Image (cartoon, rainbow, N blue to C red; front, side):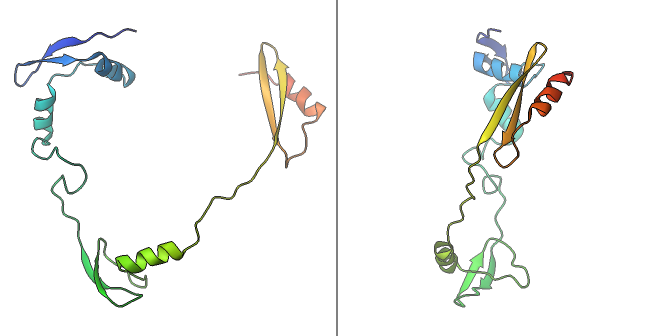
Amino acid sequence: MEFVDRLLTCADCGQEFIFTAGEQLFFFDKQFKNDPKRCKPCKSKRAGAGARSAGTGPAAAGISRTETRTTCSECGVETTVPFKPTQGRPVLCRQCFQNKRAAAPAVTPATTTTTATTALVATGTTTTALVAAAAAPPISAEVMTAAAQVPQV
């Protein structure tokens, strides 16, 4: 399907705006049924983002982050943290947190190498791939024959 830029009229301000081919493709991919009714400035005003469009997140939405004053469990310095500490859990100041983080060994995912055996089994008009990991026993001729006889859904 081919899309071409189109001129639409905003329902709020009456100005014409371009509904680009890229936007049309996006609407098509998302299966939106209706074309947009408003230009981008009117859509922003309607969404309430007119004055706060400079950033994102809680600060841009006018929500301040709660800071809690507490004492560092390591060095005893008074600090603020962006969460409410829970009983029995250590709270670290920024410096102690960074020192502890640097001293901790890097966690790397376990690397395992497995080789796989693939057997292609012709079943009617299609081909089915049977894959067996090296840790598993090899695919026997009986298994391949049985797989070939299973009807495809």
